[in-house]
Amino acid sequence: MTTYNPVELILKKRNGFLLDTDEIDFFINGFLSGAIADYQMSAMLMAMYFQGLETAEIRALTAAYINSGKTLSFPEEMITADKHSTGGVGDKISLMLAPIAAALGLYVPMISGRGLGHTGGTLDKLESIPGFNTQYTMPEFRDLVIKHGYALVGQSAELVPADKRIYALRDVSATVESVGLITASIMSKKIAEGAKNLVIDLKIGSGAFMPNLRRAEELASSLIETGNAFGQNVSVIFSNMNSPLGTEVGNALEVIEAIEYLKGNYRPDTYELTTALVAEMLIISGKALDFADAKKQIDAVVNSGKALQAFGEIIIAQGGDPSVIEDYSIFGKAECTIPVLCDQSGYIHKIDSSRIGYALVKIKAGRMKVSDTLDYSAGASLPYKIGDYVEADSVLALVHCNDAEQGMLVANEIKAAYAILDMQIAPEKLIYKIQRNGV
Image (tube, rainbow, N blue to C red; front, top):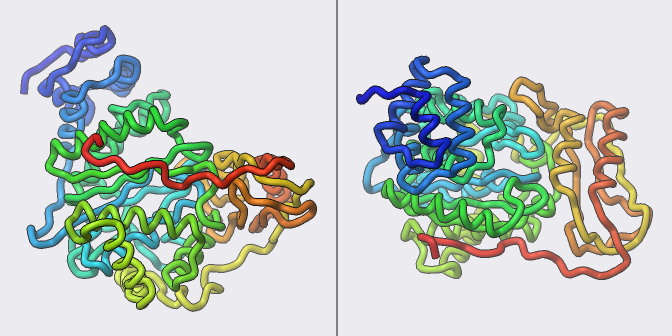
């Protein structure tokens, strides 16, 4: 490999020039080996943040991330697909989507993350199931997927280690919101895990990190182009994150809601989004002709109980207690239930979903740093959406907690997150659009 002066490369990018593949490889490998210091990588990230990354640079950075570790592959006859969400409040969609997709014959190697800040994490939700193990080596993970059709695990230290280390620096150097850096981070993991078909749930709104559709479209195009360059089919669904998804926010509460969904008891919003995402997985994988065909298949495996059976199977395979499917008391129940009462009658015009997410951290339903401990039973029940009518003194939400004092503070925060007015307002669309191959 050609040797470069790290300072000269930082200066080159800072001044708006493109880095070539060799230069990016040198910088990433140098950082991993310790030859390039954290402060130099932070300076490079800031230069990339302000100057942006061109398509060729994003591809080179993605490849460098992938090549920093091991990759998975599956037999050619196995149709692999996955879903990635950019994160939201009450987003338990993976818990329903993966068993449904597996019951329909897709192989889903789903590598998930932990919650941080106002967004929840799939791994934390799964670990609220007693005994459920999310940490596997890559060969073990592959075996689970081949045997059961899917697995829900955390990122192995062997998979894209460069991204893991660099993301930690992005988090503390204010360089997270870069389209190029986001693309390389997401796509490197999804390509390395071996999924040939990928659907991305790109969230927009008060509970998402993308504030508007224009910025989201820029990211979507970058994700699709990068995936295609590595032989991956990528589709992006733009979804509304102004209202929390479903009715429950909190780890065990969300798993229970997901189990109820797989029993056929679903909320309109979780049904619409889950169906749209699984349908798109089936369509781009060639297992459905169109949305109507896909929806018919999806409804059939839920109504027959096959999807619920697939969820029970993976709970057992990953060491969890399958009794939770019928006995929710196994999750444990919060000692306190604090009602949030409406001060006035009217229509809900706005919900500050991120404020709700951050408030719930105070009762340990979420975390602000990775080392924070969680209370799996804590959370909130939030039955109303934007456009819904509520009566004065009715229960707007319920806070579930084991600390009454903190729970009251959280209840007040949740109340302040809702804007209720006399004027009627139409419900918001949940799915804005679908983008495939830049279209």
